[in-house]
Image (cartoon, rainbow, N blue to C red; front, side):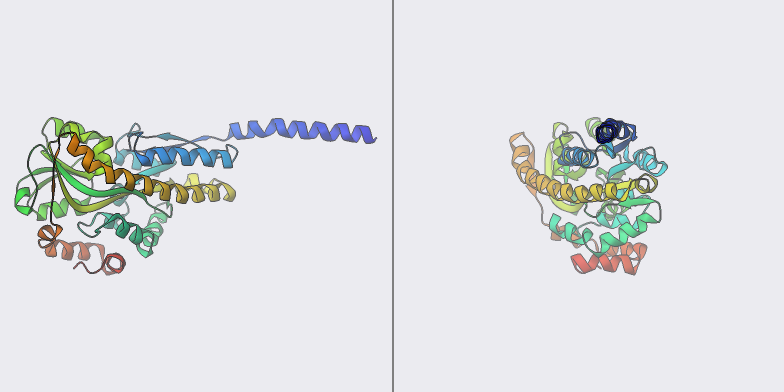
Length: 331
């Protein structure tokens, strides 16, 4: 009897071991998406993150990353996230802002002097407020935003040193109401284009310049079709890692904990990576032939009083107050 019991026990363990891989294999493969090129720190770290999650959950959470806008432009990827065709999406704040209006506070011009100002803002009460608003639309936002960096202006030859240089200037801006409003206030002609459309628009002179973070200017190779880099630091860009609410709620709590823990870990690593990369790029662009000029932010901010008043009225005193709680008085 003892021998028979031992044999049955071994047989049961063997069967369970054989079944475990098949259970993992039966778990559906999930989709993650972004507009970032493969070499961007955001794409690199998100791939590493999903590899760690896959390993920790024994394949239960298996996310395949689709970067570089291969699943479509940002508005289309946002629609896919809402429908559940995409499960996870690393998206610019302006893209989220098309649906969750308060997320557009990320793009308030000249609100952040450094990336550190932005991290403090969105790691704090304003970030929590935005995450709560997103839940009402069945979107889960993870705790830490990912880094894009301070935004600069590139042109096909014109130096941007003051508001006067922007009069009538055709500028590609991110899909963002605050950026469009700010550059209109400056007298420019802002055109909102998806990142995937920007290179061709610059190359064919549909627009004469663009505003982007340094890492995107590098990884999207915009320096090939631009001649001047003006360091305006007019805004900050970050990325929200988000999940479709239904996809998220289907995961066991232990799997959710693994995703949340790794999302926070890799967001911090990506912030460091992108900050290091951005610190090297101005010299790189200069060596590659771009003329580089610095600007005085005060010469631009002095024109923004009506803009700030308009933004405050549009977002309301609560959300605007949470922003100013972190960055100081704007309007």
